[in-house]
Image (cartoon, rainbow, N blue to C red):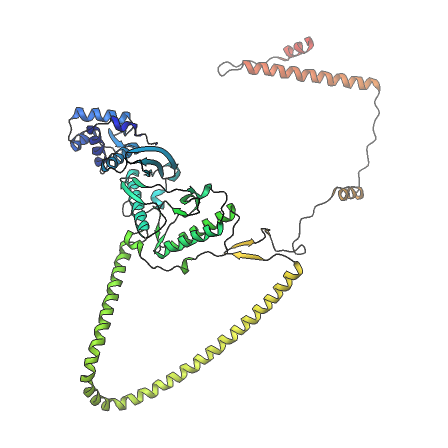
Length: 516
C-alpha cells in the first residue's frame, strides 16, 4: 500500500484516538468490535461511529462483517500513527517521493523544518513475495503466531538497534536518527546501489574493502546474512555504505559458517560476472576471531538466553580463578616458613615408601620413551614416502603440461577458473573420449548401393481413353469433396445447443452435386 499523507491534515483528535484504540484492541483481538473501541477511546457511540466512517473512507481501517463485525488497522493507518508521533517529536515535517521498494519495506524521502533531507523506511512484512518471513526470521521467538503489523514493528526495532551499534563502533552505515512503531528515520547516504554500477575504476580496491568489511563484522561477532549488491551503496569516490540489517546473525549461530560463506560467494560471483574480476583470495570463517562481543550487547539472532547465562557464568569463573591465584601467591610465601619444620619430620617417615614408587615410575617412563621413539620413526617414514610420491606426481604433471601446451587452471574453492578466460569443459583427450558416429551423405549413398535392392516393377503404359477417364474421376471426386465441405460449414453455423439440425439425405446431396 502506497503512503499518501494528504489525509493527515483532515483528521481530528477523535480520529487519532479511535486509531490508537483499534491498535490497543488488536493486542487481544484480530477484529476489534465497535463497543470495545468506544470504551478504549473514551468516546460516545455516535462520535466513534463517525470517526470510524472517516477512517474507513481514507482506507486507514479494514471492516469485516462476515462472521464477526469488527475493524482492524491497515498498513496506511499504522503509517499515520507513526508519522503523527514523529511530527510531534519534531523529527520530520515533510514527506517526499518514494525512492525504493523492497520485498519487506518501502523507502521515502522526508525533511525537517530546516529542509534537511532524511530517509524514512517503512517495514511492510507479509507481502506475497515474502510470505515465509515467520520461518526465515526469528522475530516471533517463543510465540507461535502474530500479526504482520507486530512483526514489522519488531523488524524495525531490531534494525535500529543494529544500525546504532554499528554506527557507534565506526562501521560505514547511515546515521540512525529516530524510530517509532515500524518506521525508521536515518540520514540519506549519498551513493548508488552496486547493482546499478557498470564499471569501476579500481575493482580490486572495492573487492578488498568489501571482504575486509565482512571480516570486521565477524570480528565483532556479527554476520550480515544478506551481503549482496542490492544492500551496498557506493559513491563517486568508491566509498562503501552498508544498509539493511534486520536479518543479521551472531557468529555463535548454528548455521553461522553457511551464512558467512554465502556472503563471500555473493560478492565473488558478482565481481566475476559484472566487472570480469576474479579475486585470488577470500576470507574463511575459521580464520575469523571474535575480538568484540557486539552480538551479546544487541542480543543478535542465534545468541540465546541460555548462551548468555553460560557466557556470564564463564566470565565469573575466570574472575574467581584470577582472584584465587593472586591470593594463593601471597599466602604461599607466609606458609612456606611454617611448614618447613613439619615437612622435615614427615620426610624421614616417607623416604622408604617413596623409593619404591620412584623405581616403578622410572620403569614406566622408560617404556613410554621407547614407544614415542617408535611412533616418531613411523611418522618420518610416512612423510618421506608422501614427499617422494608428490615429487613424482609434480614431475609427471609438468611433463604433460609441456607436451600439451595447455594454460594452467587455478582452482578457487570448487570453481575451475582460467586467467585467460578460456574455459575448458573437460580434461579428456580425443583418444579417451569416444564421440558418437556421424555418417556423411556420400557414405550413406555408398551403403545404399552395396545393399541388395528389390527388382523394380515394370511400368504399364496407359491409353489416351483411360487417361481421360481417370482425369474425369479425379475431377468429380474433387467436386464432391468441395460440396461436402460447404455443406458441413453451413450445418455448423446453423447448429446450436438447443436445436440440432437433421442430417441431409443422400438424394439432396446428389441433387446439389448435379446442379453444381
